[in-house]
Length: 481
Image 1 (cartoon, rainbow, N blue to C red):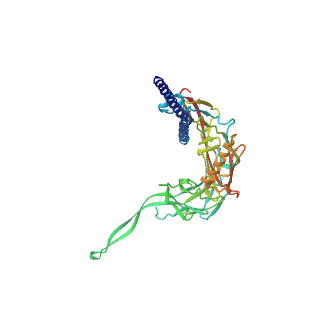
Image 2 (image 1 turned 30 degrees about the vertical axis):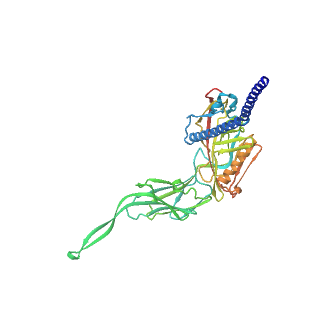
Image 3 (image 1 turned 120 degrees about the vertical axis):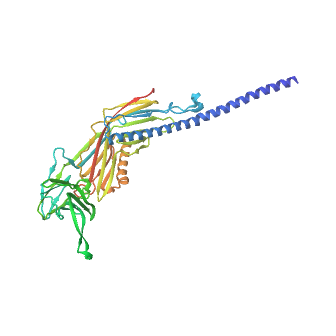
């Protein structure tokens, strides 16, 4: 009996040890499963959320830079903070007391003008009318007479001035005097118009019961104005709109028919045949038309600028490595499999019909002298300001102003070259609605490009406008890394 009792105690002690080992094994198995699956899932979620924050920061950064150049806020610094990594940036819950149960925090690097080993360059070349900075070239003044005279203008005009002088300002009710200008699909009539107040006068005639109340029209002369009436394609777009009020005799008044307020600039096709005449029965009006060309034709006009970039690269441990960068007004995402744009750069296209194309460009570039790199997990602050040399490319303010244009982005990054070619093609065709018969787009070993030509009939069919905005940027850490 005694021996049996001792063996029973030994068996009970052994079962407790085995139970403890089993429990420890279950705990270790659960611990291992959490390390293998739970920690990476948590780390992946942290890094995805972090990259989403980076995306939002770049969107915010673009909006801020757009505000700087659209409002011409030169010298005003804009500050933006970017969190560089997930280490210390995300909550770990109750497991944070056990470091091994936490995902390894990722780090990041933000860099200025260091995305590629050689600068990426934006270049636009075109055969265009370029604004003349020295003088306005005017055609021979044309004296307008009652006999219609047709003048042919081969090139787009920047101004079409009609100067009118009335030697008398009559108070007569019907001093009908007009300068009449006819185009192919439009008509403009500049009138010297008296402004009258009309009323009726009443009087009693007859005597006694045979009296009658009679009325007669009368008027009071107030002043004489110069007005304009415009018809486009037979439809009246302006009707007697006052240009000058209360004109004085002997004073010359100038009317620019290509003022945007009259809406004629976009309807005149060149070569343009314009017919002038004056209705002047009193022979007291002198009218002279003068064509103005504030530009000259320049073949192969070229503007080129290093773009630079503000780039954030991450060293993700559980999520795919990604790089976000800002360049040329766009936000781009770079991964191993290629580059795509999250927000488009500042190059837009529009199809105006009949082979006519509009291209708008804002050449946003960083100062090539700026450079800086900060890595780690602490936030970094980016300060950006618009340099005072922002301006416009000197394309003539006429429409159209260009025969053909080539836009090139030179880059040593083959993925960037493919991305730029894809964007330029999509922006022109899908967004701008330009038929592929009017342009070609693609990429080479040196970058992406688009070549626009519209209808090849010897006349310009592209309206090209461009602005330049140069940015200066610096980076500094706001915490330990």
